[in-house]
Length: 458
Ligand SMILES: Cc1cc2nc3c(=O)[nH]c(=O)nc-3n(C[C@H](O)[C@H](O)[C@H](O)COP(=O)(O)OP(=O)(O)OC[C@H]3O[C@@H](n4cnc5c(N)ncnc54)[C@H](O)[C@@H]3O)c2cc1C
Image 1 (cartoon, rainbow, N blue to C red):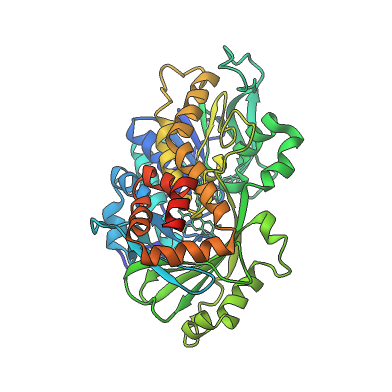
Image 2: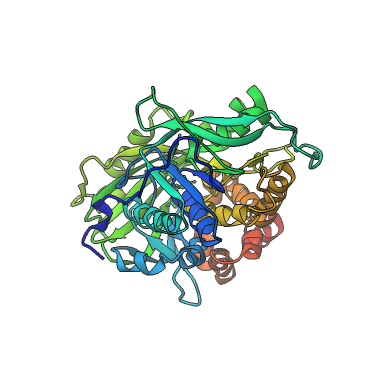
Protein backbone atom coordinates (compact mmCIF):
# COMPACT_ATOMS: atom_id res chain seq x y z
CA UNK A 1 0.00 0.00 0.00
CA UNK A 2 1.42 3.37 -1.06
CA UNK A 3 2.57 5.77 1.64
CA UNK A 4 -0.20 8.11 2.75
CA UNK A 5 -2.52 6.51 0.19
CA UNK A 6 -5.36 8.51 1.72
CA UNK A 7 -3.92 11.68 0.21
CA UNK A 8 -4.27 10.22 -3.31
CA UNK A 9 -7.31 10.65 -5.59
CA UNK A 10 -9.70 7.73 -6.04
CA UNK A 11 -10.24 6.57 -9.64
CA UNK A 12 -13.89 7.04 -10.71
CA UNK A 13 -13.79 5.47 -14.18
CA UNK A 14 -15.88 6.57 -17.17
CA UNK A 15 -18.70 9.00 -16.37
CA UNK A 16 -22.23 7.91 -17.29
CA UNK A 17 -24.39 9.86 -19.75
CA UNK A 18 -27.37 11.75 -18.38
CA UNK A 19 -30.46 9.56 -18.55
CA UNK A 20 -28.54 6.31 -17.78
CA UNK A 21 -30.43 3.64 -15.86
CA UNK A 22 -28.98 1.45 -13.09
CA UNK A 23 -30.22 -1.22 -10.65
CA UNK A 24 -29.38 0.96 -7.65
CA UNK A 25 -28.41 4.59 -7.19
CA UNK A 26 -26.49 5.29 -3.97
CA UNK A 27 -26.45 8.93 -2.86
CA UNK A 28 -23.42 9.49 -0.62
CA UNK A 29 -20.12 7.61 -0.42
CA UNK A 30 -19.43 7.80 3.35
CA UNK A 31 -19.36 4.52 5.31
CA UNK A 32 -23.10 3.86 4.78
CA UNK A 33 -23.08 4.61 1.05
CA UNK A 34 -19.77 2.87 0.38
CA UNK A 35 -21.07 -0.23 2.18
CA UNK A 36 -24.43 -0.10 0.35
CA UNK A 37 -22.70 0.25 -3.03
CA UNK A 38 -20.23 -2.50 -2.10
CA UNK A 39 -22.90 -4.96 -0.94
CA UNK A 40 -25.03 -4.25 -4.03
CA UNK A 41 -22.08 -4.73 -6.40
CA UNK A 42 -21.06 -7.94 -4.60
CA UNK A 43 -24.63 -9.18 -5.22
CA UNK A 44 -24.14 -8.56 -8.96
CA UNK A 45 -26.13 -5.32 -9.24
CA UNK A 46 -25.26 -2.39 -11.52
CA UNK A 47 -24.72 0.53 -9.20
CA UNK A 48 -24.35 4.30 -9.59
CA UNK A 49 -22.41 5.68 -6.61
CA UNK A 50 -22.60 9.47 -6.24
CA UNK A 51 -20.88 11.85 -3.85
CA UNK A 52 -20.66 15.61 -3.85
CA UNK A 53 -17.15 15.43 -2.38
CA UNK A 54 -13.98 14.54 -4.23
CA UNK A 55 -11.56 12.18 -2.50
CA UNK A 56 -9.30 12.71 -0.61
CA UNK A 57 -11.70 14.29 1.86
CA UNK A 58 -12.17 14.61 5.64
CA UNK A 59 -15.30 13.95 7.71
CA UNK A 60 -15.80 15.41 11.18
CA UNK A 61 -15.94 12.45 13.54
CA UNK A 62 -14.44 10.90 16.69
CA UNK A 63 -12.88 8.33 14.32
CA UNK A 64 -13.73 5.25 16.43
CA UNK A 65 -14.72 2.30 14.27
CA UNK A 66 -16.34 0.08 16.90
CA UNK A 67 -16.77 -3.67 17.18
CA UNK A 68 -20.06 -3.72 15.27
CA UNK A 69 -18.20 -2.63 12.12
CA UNK A 70 -15.70 -5.47 12.14
CA UNK A 71 -17.79 -8.14 10.40
CA UNK A 72 -18.80 -5.63 7.69
CA UNK A 73 -15.29 -4.41 6.93
CA UNK A 74 -14.32 -8.08 6.72
CA UNK A 75 -17.18 -8.91 4.31
CA UNK A 76 -16.43 -5.90 2.15
CA UNK A 77 -12.79 -6.97 1.94
CA UNK A 78 -11.20 -3.94 3.64
CA UNK A 79 -10.21 -5.22 7.06
CA UNK A 80 -6.66 -6.02 5.96
CA UNK A 81 -6.39 -2.58 4.31
CA UNK A 82 -7.42 -0.93 7.60
CA UNK A 83 -4.93 -3.00 9.54
CA UNK A 84 -2.17 -2.21 7.08
CA UNK A 85 -2.80 1.53 7.47
CA UNK A 86 -1.79 3.50 10.60
CA UNK A 87 -4.42 3.06 13.32
CA UNK A 88 -5.05 2.68 17.05
CA UNK A 89 -6.37 -0.65 18.36
CA UNK A 90 -9.13 -0.27 20.96
CA UNK A 91 -8.73 -2.69 23.86
CA UNK A 92 -11.17 -1.09 26.30
CA UNK A 93 -12.83 2.07 27.56
CA UNK A 94 -11.85 4.50 30.31
CA UNK A 95 -14.66 6.51 31.93
CA UNK A 96 -14.20 9.32 34.44
CA UNK A 97 -16.85 10.87 36.67
CA UNK A 98 -17.38 14.57 37.44
CA UNK A 99 -15.66 13.86 40.79
CA UNK A 100 -12.61 12.62 38.85
CA UNK A 101 -12.87 8.88 39.64
CA UNK A 102 -11.60 6.74 36.78
CA UNK A 103 -13.01 3.41 35.70
CA UNK A 104 -11.39 1.13 33.13
CA UNK A 105 -13.32 -1.63 31.41
CA UNK A 106 -12.05 -4.01 28.79
CA UNK A 107 -13.33 -7.15 27.15
CA UNK A 108 -12.71 -10.18 29.31
CA UNK A 109 -11.84 -12.30 26.26
CA UNK A 110 -9.02 -9.92 25.33
CA UNK A 111 -10.55 -9.44 21.86
CA UNK A 112 -10.17 -6.22 19.91
CA UNK A 113 -13.07 -3.80 20.44
CA UNK A 114 -12.38 -1.84 17.24
CA UNK A 115 -10.05 0.68 15.65
CA UNK A 116 -9.53 4.41 15.72
CA UNK A 117 -8.20 5.91 12.50
CA UNK A 118 -8.87 9.31 10.95
CA UNK A 119 -11.95 9.32 8.72
CA UNK A 120 -9.72 10.76 6.02
CA UNK A 121 -8.12 7.29 5.96
CA UNK A 122 -11.10 5.08 6.80
CA UNK A 123 -13.46 6.70 4.30
CA UNK A 124 -10.76 6.59 1.63
CA UNK A 125 -10.37 2.83 2.14
CA UNK A 126 -14.16 2.32 2.10
CA UNK A 127 -14.83 4.55 -0.90
CA UNK A 128 -11.95 3.17 -2.93
CA UNK A 129 -13.12 -0.41 -2.31
CA UNK A 130 -16.72 0.51 -3.17
CA UNK A 131 -15.54 2.18 -6.38
CA UNK A 132 -13.52 -0.92 -7.36
CA UNK A 133 -16.50 -3.22 -6.77
CA UNK A 134 -18.95 -0.91 -8.54
CA UNK A 135 -16.71 -0.51 -11.60
CA UNK A 136 -16.00 -4.27 -11.75
CA UNK A 137 -19.78 -4.82 -11.76
CA UNK A 138 -20.32 -2.52 -14.75
CA UNK A 139 -21.65 0.40 -12.69
CA UNK A 140 -20.41 3.99 -12.41
CA UNK A 141 -18.94 6.29 -9.79
CA UNK A 142 -19.20 10.07 -9.76
CA UNK A 143 -17.30 12.32 -7.36
CA UNK A 144 -18.00 16.02 -7.12
CA UNK A 145 -21.59 15.29 -8.13
CA UNK A 146 -24.13 16.98 -5.84
CA UNK A 147 -27.63 15.52 -5.87
CA UNK A 148 -30.03 18.47 -5.84
CA UNK A 149 -33.32 16.82 -6.63
CA UNK A 150 -35.04 13.53 -5.94
CA UNK A 151 -37.21 12.49 -8.89
CA UNK A 152 -40.66 11.03 -8.25
CA UNK A 153 -43.36 9.53 -10.41
CA UNK A 154 -46.99 9.82 -9.52
CA UNK A 155 -47.94 6.22 -10.16
CA UNK A 156 -49.84 4.29 -7.51
CA UNK A 157 -47.52 2.76 -4.95
CA UNK A 158 -49.17 -0.63 -4.72
CA UNK A 159 -50.81 -2.10 -1.63
CA UNK A 160 -50.69 -0.07 1.57
CA UNK A 161 -48.14 -1.93 3.76
CA UNK A 162 -50.02 -1.22 6.99
CA UNK A 163 -51.15 1.44 9.44
CA UNK A 164 -48.82 4.38 9.79
CA UNK A 165 -46.80 3.46 6.71
CA UNK A 166 -48.22 6.35 4.74
CA UNK A 167 -48.52 6.69 1.02
CA UNK A 168 -45.52 8.32 -0.60
CA UNK A 169 -44.90 8.96 -4.24
CA UNK A 170 -42.37 6.62 -5.83
CA UNK A 171 -38.72 7.73 -6.08
CA UNK A 172 -37.48 6.93 -9.61
CA UNK A 173 -34.04 8.55 -9.57
CA UNK A 174 -32.07 11.71 -8.86
CA UNK A 175 -30.80 14.80 -10.62
CA UNK A 176 -27.82 16.98 -9.82
CA UNK A 177 -24.68 18.55 -11.17
CA UNK A 178 -20.94 18.74 -10.84
CA UNK A 179 -20.91 22.29 -9.54
CA UNK A 180 -22.25 23.88 -12.69
CA UNK A 181 -25.87 24.42 -11.69
CA UNK A 182 -26.84 25.21 -15.26
CA UNK A 183 -26.11 21.64 -16.49
CA UNK A 184 -28.25 19.18 -14.57
CA UNK A 185 -27.79 15.43 -15.17
CA UNK A 186 -30.39 12.87 -14.17
CA UNK A 187 -30.24 9.11 -13.54
CA UNK A 188 -32.87 6.49 -12.83
CA UNK A 189 -33.11 3.16 -10.98
CA UNK A 190 -35.83 1.06 -9.32
CA UNK A 191 -34.05 1.70 -5.99
CA UNK A 192 -32.33 4.80 -4.63
CA UNK A 193 -30.36 4.46 -1.39
CA UNK A 194 -30.19 7.66 0.67
CA UNK A 195 -26.76 7.63 2.36
CA UNK A 196 -26.04 11.34 2.26
CA UNK A 197 -25.60 11.80 6.02
CA UNK A 198 -27.38 14.37 8.21
CA UNK A 199 -28.59 16.47 5.28
CA UNK A 200 -29.18 13.67 2.79
CA UNK A 201 -31.47 14.96 0.02
CA UNK A 202 -33.25 11.59 -0.25
CA UNK A 203 -33.92 11.58 3.51
CA UNK A 204 -35.13 15.17 3.39
CA UNK A 205 -37.62 14.25 0.64
CA UNK A 206 -38.89 11.14 2.46
CA UNK A 207 -38.98 12.74 5.91
CA UNK A 208 -40.69 15.92 4.72
CA UNK A 209 -43.34 13.95 2.85
CA UNK A 210 -43.99 11.90 5.99
CA UNK A 211 -43.90 14.41 8.81
CA UNK A 212 -44.52 17.82 7.17
CA UNK A 213 -43.75 20.74 9.48
CA UNK A 214 -44.32 18.60 12.57
CA UNK A 215 -40.83 17.19 12.58
CA UNK A 216 -38.83 20.38 12.78
CA UNK A 217 -39.01 21.11 16.52
CA UNK A 218 -39.55 17.60 17.69
CA UNK A 219 -36.62 16.21 15.70
CA UNK A 220 -34.32 18.69 17.45
CA UNK A 221 -34.65 16.55 20.57
CA UNK A 222 -32.96 13.75 18.67
CA UNK A 223 -29.79 15.49 17.56
CA UNK A 224 -26.44 15.95 19.22
CA UNK A 225 -23.80 18.47 18.32
CA UNK A 226 -20.12 17.59 18.55
CA UNK A 227 -16.75 19.23 18.05
CA UNK A 228 -13.41 17.59 17.27
CA UNK A 229 -9.77 18.55 17.05
CA UNK A 230 -6.54 16.60 16.52
CA UNK A 231 -3.81 17.01 19.14
CA UNK A 232 -0.25 15.67 19.30
CA UNK A 233 1.41 14.47 22.52
CA UNK A 234 -1.53 14.37 24.91
CA UNK A 235 -0.08 12.89 28.08
CA UNK A 236 -1.09 9.27 28.60
CA UNK A 237 -2.54 8.90 25.10
CA UNK A 238 0.39 8.43 22.75
CA UNK A 239 0.42 4.62 22.40
CA UNK A 240 -0.92 2.70 19.39
CA UNK A 241 -3.30 0.53 21.40
CA UNK A 242 -5.23 0.88 24.65
CA UNK A 243 -8.52 2.34 25.85
CA UNK A 244 -10.58 5.13 24.34
CA UNK A 245 -11.57 7.73 26.97
CA UNK A 246 -14.96 9.25 27.86
CA UNK A 247 -15.00 11.94 30.56
CA UNK A 248 -17.91 13.58 32.38
CA UNK A 249 -16.87 16.96 33.69
CA UNK A 250 -18.46 19.57 35.95
CA UNK A 251 -19.33 22.76 34.10
CA UNK A 252 -20.01 21.04 30.77
CA UNK A 253 -22.53 18.37 31.80
CA UNK A 254 -24.51 16.65 30.44
CA UNK A 255 -22.07 16.60 27.55
CA UNK A 256 -19.00 14.39 27.46
CA UNK A 257 -15.40 14.90 26.48
CA UNK A 258 -13.51 12.22 24.57
CA UNK A 259 -9.88 11.44 23.91
CA UNK A 260 -9.50 8.84 21.17
CA UNK A 261 -5.89 8.20 20.13
CA UNK A 262 -5.53 7.54 16.40
CA UNK A 263 -1.95 6.20 16.63
CA UNK A 264 1.37 7.85 15.87
CA UNK A 265 1.11 10.04 18.99
CA UNK A 266 -1.98 11.89 17.69
CA UNK A 267 -5.41 11.99 19.37
CA UNK A 268 -8.88 12.87 18.20
CA UNK A 269 -10.17 15.07 21.04
CA UNK A 270 -13.78 16.18 21.14
CA UNK A 271 -16.88 17.17 22.98
CA UNK A 272 -20.46 16.06 22.33
CA UNK A 273 -23.78 17.19 23.80
CA UNK A 274 -27.48 16.93 22.93
CA UNK A 275 -28.58 20.00 20.93
CA UNK A 276 -31.23 20.98 23.46
CA UNK A 277 -28.62 20.82 26.29
CA UNK A 278 -26.16 22.91 24.32
CA UNK A 279 -28.77 25.66 24.23
CA UNK A 280 -28.61 25.79 28.07
CA UNK A 281 -24.88 26.65 28.05
CA UNK A 282 -23.56 30.18 27.54
CA UNK A 283 -20.58 28.88 25.60
CA UNK A 284 -20.64 27.20 22.22
CA UNK A 285 -19.01 23.82 21.50
CA UNK A 286 -15.53 25.21 20.89
CA UNK A 287 -15.72 27.31 24.08
CA UNK A 288 -16.75 24.28 26.13
CA UNK A 289 -13.85 22.24 24.75
CA UNK A 290 -11.40 25.10 25.37
CA UNK A 291 -12.67 25.36 28.95
CA UNK A 292 -11.95 21.64 29.52
CA UNK A 293 -8.48 21.71 27.99
CA UNK A 294 -7.34 25.03 29.47
CA UNK A 295 -9.11 25.20 32.83
CA UNK A 296 -10.04 21.78 34.24
CA UNK A 297 -6.87 20.83 36.18
CA UNK A 298 -6.73 17.12 35.29
CA UNK A 299 -6.88 17.91 31.56
CA UNK A 300 -4.90 21.15 31.68
CA UNK A 301 -1.98 19.08 32.96
CA UNK A 302 -2.36 16.40 30.30
CA UNK A 303 -2.49 19.02 27.52
CA UNK A 304 0.34 21.17 28.91
CA UNK A 305 2.91 19.80 26.40
CA UNK A 306 0.38 18.94 23.69
CA UNK A 307 0.11 20.70 20.36
CA UNK A 308 -3.08 21.36 18.38
CA UNK A 309 -2.95 20.19 14.76
CA UNK A 310 -3.60 23.36 12.76
CA UNK A 311 -6.90 23.48 10.88
CA UNK A 312 -8.35 20.42 12.62
CA UNK A 313 -11.12 22.15 14.65
CA UNK A 314 -14.54 21.28 13.27
CA UNK A 315 -18.08 20.77 14.54
CA UNK A 316 -21.00 18.85 13.08
CA UNK A 317 -24.32 17.24 14.01
CA UNK A 318 -25.27 13.67 14.93
CA UNK A 319 -28.79 12.44 14.16
CA UNK A 320 -29.61 10.08 17.02
CA UNK A 321 -31.45 6.78 16.92
CA UNK A 322 -33.39 7.58 20.09
CA UNK A 323 -37.01 6.37 19.95
CA UNK A 324 -39.57 8.99 18.91
CA UNK A 325 -42.53 8.83 21.31
CA UNK A 326 -45.80 7.93 19.65
CA UNK A 327 -44.33 7.19 16.21
CA UNK A 328 -45.03 3.90 14.49
CA UNK A 329 -41.88 4.07 12.40
CA UNK A 330 -38.86 4.00 14.68
CA UNK A 331 -36.60 5.80 15.05
CA UNK A 332 -38.11 7.65 12.09
CA UNK A 333 -39.20 6.78 8.58
CA UNK A 334 -36.34 5.17 6.61
CA UNK A 335 -38.04 4.19 3.36
CA UNK A 336 -40.39 5.25 0.62
CA UNK A 337 -41.52 3.57 -2.57
CA UNK A 338 -38.31 3.37 -4.60
CA UNK A 339 -36.02 4.38 -1.73
CA UNK A 340 -34.37 3.27 1.50
CA UNK A 341 -32.27 5.35 3.89
CA UNK A 342 -29.15 4.13 5.70
CA UNK A 343 -26.74 5.47 8.33
CA UNK A 344 -27.12 9.09 9.42
CA UNK A 345 -29.76 9.62 6.73
CA UNK A 346 -31.91 7.17 8.75
CA UNK A 347 -30.93 8.83 12.10
CA UNK A 348 -29.17 5.83 13.59
CA UNK A 349 -26.40 7.26 15.79
CA UNK A 350 -26.16 5.61 19.22
CA UNK A 351 -27.55 8.21 21.68
CA UNK A 352 -25.08 7.31 24.46
CA UNK A 353 -21.77 6.69 22.69
CA UNK A 354 -22.27 8.84 19.58
CA UNK A 355 -21.27 5.87 17.45
CA UNK A 356 -22.80 5.88 13.97
CA UNK A 357 -20.40 4.07 11.65
CA UNK A 358 -21.37 0.56 12.80
CA UNK A 359 -25.08 1.25 12.33
CA UNK A 360 -24.40 2.83 8.94
CA UNK A 361 -22.68 -0.36 7.76
CA UNK A 362 -25.28 -2.61 9.33
CA UNK A 363 -28.24 -0.70 7.88
CA UNK A 364 -26.60 -0.71 4.42
CA UNK A 365 -26.35 -4.50 4.48
CA UNK A 366 -29.89 -4.87 5.81
CA UNK A 367 -31.32 -2.48 3.19
CA UNK A 368 -29.71 -4.29 0.25
CA UNK A 369 -30.98 -7.58 1.67
CA UNK A 370 -34.52 -6.31 0.98
CA UNK A 371 -33.91 -5.49 -2.68
CA UNK A 372 -34.26 -7.96 -5.53
CA UNK A 373 -33.40 -6.29 -8.87
CA UNK A 374 -35.45 -8.80 -10.87
CA UNK A 375 -38.55 -8.85 -8.72
CA UNK A 376 -38.37 -5.07 -8.20
CA UNK A 377 -37.31 -4.15 -11.73
CA UNK A 378 -40.38 -1.93 -12.17
CA UNK A 379 -39.77 -0.09 -8.90
CA UNK A 380 -38.84 -0.97 -5.32
CA UNK A 381 -42.21 -1.41 -3.59
CA UNK A 382 -43.36 0.40 -0.49
CA UNK A 383 -44.08 -2.83 1.40
CA UNK A 384 -40.49 -4.10 0.88
CA UNK A 385 -39.29 -0.81 2.37
CA UNK A 386 -41.65 -1.29 5.31
CA UNK A 387 -40.11 -4.74 5.86
CA UNK A 388 -36.65 -3.13 5.89
CA UNK A 389 -37.80 -0.63 8.52
CA UNK A 390 -39.25 -3.38 10.71
CA UNK A 391 -36.07 -5.48 10.37
CA UNK A 392 -33.95 -2.42 11.20
CA UNK A 393 -35.83 -1.65 14.39
CA UNK A 394 -35.96 -5.32 15.36
CA UNK A 395 -32.17 -5.45 15.07
CA UNK A 396 -31.35 -2.06 16.59
CA UNK A 397 -34.39 -0.98 18.62
CA UNK A 398 -33.39 -2.78 21.79
CA UNK A 399 -29.92 -1.29 22.02
CA UNK A 400 -30.96 2.17 20.82
CA UNK A 401 -33.71 2.30 23.46
CA UNK A 402 -31.25 1.23 26.15
CA UNK A 403 -28.60 3.67 25.00
CA UNK A 404 -31.16 6.45 25.15
CA UNK A 405 -32.04 5.47 28.72
CA UNK A 406 -28.36 5.43 29.68
CA UNK A 407 -27.88 8.81 27.98
CA UNK A 408 -30.73 10.18 30.10
CA UNK A 409 -29.36 8.66 33.31
CA UNK A 410 -25.95 10.16 32.55
CA UNK A 411 -27.54 13.63 32.72
CA UNK A 412 -27.53 13.35 36.52
CA UNK A 413 -24.22 14.33 38.08
CA UNK A 414 -24.78 12.42 41.32
CA UNK A 415 -25.67 9.29 39.39
CA UNK A 416 -22.50 9.48 37.31
CA UNK A 417 -20.39 10.00 40.43
CA UNK A 418 -22.13 7.19 42.24
CA UNK A 419 -22.11 4.80 39.32
CA UNK A 420 -18.46 5.22 38.39
CA UNK A 421 -17.36 5.27 42.03
CA UNK A 422 -19.36 2.15 42.81
CA UNK A 423 -18.23 0.30 39.67
CA UNK A 424 -14.62 0.85 40.68
CA UNK A 425 -15.32 -1.09 43.85
CA UNK A 426 -17.99 -3.58 42.80
CA UNK A 427 -16.96 -6.47 40.61
CA UNK A 428 -20.56 -7.29 39.61
CA UNK A 429 -21.23 -3.80 38.28
CA UNK A 430 -17.89 -3.78 36.47
CA UNK A 431 -18.71 -7.14 34.92
CA UNK A 432 -22.04 -5.88 33.57
CA UNK A 433 -20.41 -2.74 32.23
CA UNK A 434 -17.68 -4.77 30.55
CA UNK A 435 -20.18 -7.18 29.05
CA UNK A 436 -22.36 -4.33 27.89
CA UNK A 437 -19.56 -3.52 25.46
CA UNK A 438 -20.40 -6.86 23.84
CA UNK A 439 -23.90 -7.98 24.74
CA UNK A 440 -27.26 -6.28 24.40
CA UNK A 441 -28.69 -8.25 27.33
CA UNK A 442 -26.01 -6.92 29.70
CA UNK A 443 -26.81 -3.40 28.50
CA UNK A 444 -30.38 -3.89 29.67
CA UNK A 445 -29.16 -4.55 33.23
CA UNK A 446 -27.51 -1.15 33.21
CA UNK A 447 -30.85 0.56 32.66
CA UNK A 448 -32.87 -1.66 34.96
CA UNK A 449 -34.02 0.28 38.06
CA UNK A 450 -34.02 -2.99 40.00
CA UNK A 451 -30.39 -3.73 39.13
CA UNK A 452 -29.31 -0.16 39.93
CA UNK A 453 -31.19 -0.16 43.23
CA UNK A 454 -29.63 -3.48 44.24
CA UNK A 455 -26.17 -2.14 43.38
CA UNK A 456 -26.85 1.09 45.26
CA UNK A 457 -28.14 -0.50 48.43
CA UNK A 458 -25.98 -3.60 48.79
C1 LIG B 1 -17.95 15.14 15.95
C2 LIG B 1 -18.50 13.77 15.66
C3 LIG B 1 -17.92 12.66 16.26
C4 LIG B 1 -18.36 11.36 15.93
N1 LIG B 1 -17.69 10.28 16.45
C5 LIG B 1 -17.99 9.05 16.03
C6 LIG B 1 -17.19 7.93 16.40
O1 LIG B 1 -16.15 8.07 17.06
N2 LIG B 1 -17.55 6.70 15.96
C7 LIG B 1 -18.65 6.51 15.18
O2 LIG B 1 -18.96 5.36 14.82
N3 LIG B 1 -19.43 7.56 14.79
C8 LIG B 1 -19.10 8.81 15.17
N4 LIG B 1 -19.85 9.88 14.72
C9 LIG B 1 -20.98 9.63 13.83
C10 LIG B 1 -20.48 9.28 12.42
O3 LIG B 1 -19.64 10.31 11.95
C11 LIG B 1 -21.66 9.10 11.46
O4 LIG B 1 -22.64 8.31 12.07
C12 LIG B 1 -21.22 8.43 10.15
O5 LIG B 1 -20.34 9.27 9.44
C13 LIG B 1 -22.44 8.11 9.29
O6 LIG B 1 -22.03 7.64 8.03
P1 LIG B 1 -22.94 7.92 6.75
O7 LIG B 1 -22.27 7.22 5.63
O8 LIG B 1 -24.35 7.63 7.07
O9 LIG B 1 -22.86 9.51 6.51
P2 LIG B 1 -21.63 10.45 6.23
O10 LIG B 1 -20.39 9.88 6.79
O11 LIG B 1 -22.05 11.80 6.68
O12 LIG B 1 -21.46 10.44 4.65
C14 LIG B 1 -22.39 11.11 3.84
C15 LIG B 1 -21.79 11.33 2.46
O13 LIG B 1 -22.82 11.84 1.61
C16 LIG B 1 -22.29 12.87 0.81
N5 LIG B 1 -23.39 13.76 0.45
C17 LIG B 1 -24.12 14.56 1.26
N6 LIG B 1 -25.04 15.24 0.57
C18 LIG B 1 -24.90 14.88 -0.72
C19 LIG B 1 -25.55 15.27 -1.93
N7 LIG B 1 -26.52 16.18 -1.93
N8 LIG B 1 -25.15 14.70 -3.09
C20 LIG B 1 -24.13 13.77 -3.10
N9 LIG B 1 -23.47 13.40 -1.99
C21 LIG B 1 -23.86 13.93 -0.82
C22 LIG B 1 -21.25 13.54 1.69
O14 LIG B 1 -20.27 14.23 0.92
C23 LIG B 1 -20.66 12.33 2.45
O15 LIG B 1 -19.54 11.79 1.78
C24 LIG B 1 -19.44 11.18 15.04
C25 LIG B 1 -20.05 12.31 14.46
C26 LIG B 1 -19.59 13.58 14.75
C27 LIG B 1 -20.23 14.77 14.10
